[in-house]
Image (cartoon, rainbow, N blue to C red; front, top):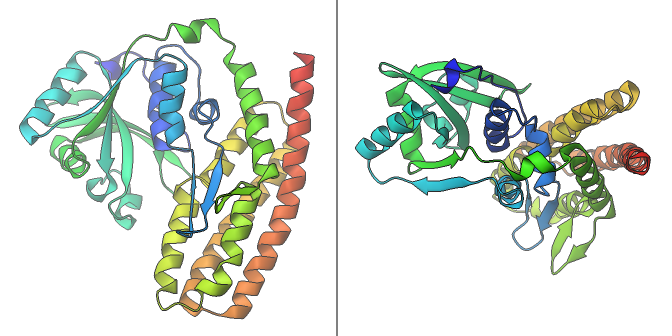
Length: 328
């Protein structure tokens, strides 16, 4: 079984790219989860002014990466519990690179899952021992993201898998194209393009992008705060900002900065930006409870100040990767 063959769970910042990355690393392709997001053009933030929702390309970047780099995979789902168990057991015994889409509702290997609703999550299945299954989770959603590799009751995993209709991915052991390309150079170009796109912002057909997405999102709160369901909306918005890419992508970028020889001072400065955004998102929830217009003004000012400092850092990063590209 895979866990017996020097498989190691590496910690990442998005669950599906983490699963894919850990299998690629197992096969001696040193591609991190953050690389996958950038290679799949995931560093794109969009605000829909009609639905008042914010999203990113972070999740779709995974399949775009697989398709663009000719990594063969099977994307499917099963109908019944018995066939799902049989499929899982067969895949693990055959050393298949199996990824399950599960619900956090029934996961219990970390207490953080007790605080979540029925959110989708991805895990690798790397072994079987009696009535237990050995799983690999490189993105446990703790306050400081962590990892888990160990045994969990098979019934618990099947129950979680059932909530997501037994959906799965199998990554095939065939990475021919990856042998012939310089991943580091391509990632550096994609990082620069992603940051430049974020700074450029813009809008089209009531969609706002990058830097302008969060500005439009916050400015709309002055109207939305008058609605009776404002608190519910704010909870949903906070979830979108934290989970659907806006906040996560900042950690993914920081991870790439640390890998790329960026100065410690600049990395530290961006870590501080991330902490400030975390505080801003906590203020957002308080705003939902209080509906206090003065708190909204305070929130807007903090976001403006944070945006100015973040923009300065991102512009320095673009210059760094431009210089790096010229030297190559």
